[in-house]
Amino acid sequence: MENVYQQIAGKMSGLSKSHVRIATYILENQTTAPFLTVGKLAKMAGVGDATVVRFATSLGYSGYAEMQQFMQSSVQKQLTTAERLKMSEEVYDKEASGVYEVFQDDISNIQATMEKMDEQAFHQAVDSLVRARKVYIIANRSASSLGVFLHYYLNIILKNSELLQSVEASAEKLSDLEEEDVVIGISFSRYTKSTIQMFSYAKEKKAATIAITDNLLSPLVPHADIPLAASSQMPSLIDSFVAPLSLINALITFVGKEKQVDIHERLDVLEGIWDHFEVFDNRK
Image (cartoon, rainbow, N blue to C red; front, side):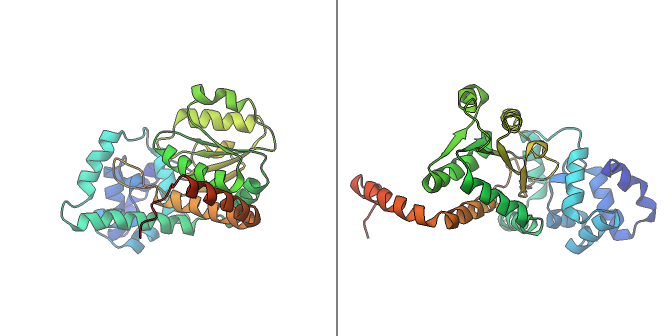
């Protein structure tokens, strides 16, 4: 498909008034528009949410999510953190209502993730994790927060997971990769180079690969046996990890369901250890 901005510009003369407003805003804000949710773009263009969706489908896309992916791939460079901070100042109101807009954008990300969820791929990922000899999780920079969370619970359930971060610190661990292993790569725009490098290496070594990323145009996807997409769009200096975390919660929950007999025995042992060292505050 041609550059989405060229496509929009070429169809301007035949658009309705409301669609012209959307097209004009997108063309005048080519570096920021790809990071806006449906609701946020609708607000900035002065139209309704449904009008934005109809605009996307009128251009031949399946919906706004697909058009957004192509807008992101058409941007010549990813926004710097400073540029994203400036964008948040323009988009979010300084009044109290602006706080609720952030929550609404997180809700929109979860909704978008639910709508585009590939249930078959999700259950394939669960099955791969349950059967894995060992699970490696690759996550860097801000995405490392997701990696730490996933690693913590998979280690309780499966007892075979390891968190990998920089190539320099993890190169030796990658030497142990086998075809019976599963490697989970977690990265969101702006994608971390070392995550892509280690993830592609895992694919070369014929380990099963699961990508947790923002969309199917992510550089992780060509190296993934199972791609799982979770929307992370937010016009701010940070990515929204609410939807990716919900996806990870679902993975942990379903892996736990498959391994519940083993988990009960392990949790009994862990509870004894936690009690012995008084890990938790038992005050009432």
